[in-house]
Image (cartoon, rainbow, N blue to C red; front, top):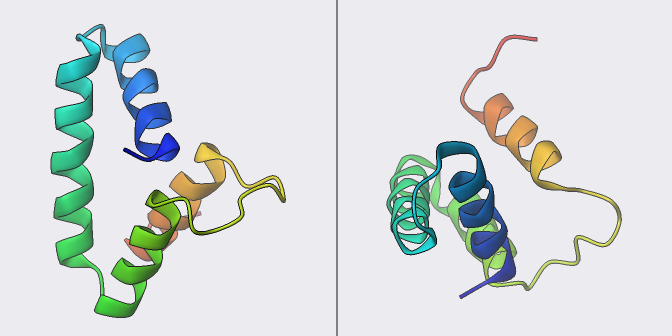
Length: 77
């Protein structure tokens, strides 16, 4: 399992108060749903990030990633 999925699951566990194993399941469901809705090239990029094949040491964090995803889905700024 990737570190990103683990980080997201830990956030879900903290914020929602569900057990970590259930949070991991929820993260998998949501990520699979999102990947199905994205164009294949972007879904592939998401897979690369989740697999740890993208260097995120330049400072992008979960907040940045959430903002990027929000932009993909038409979030108004």
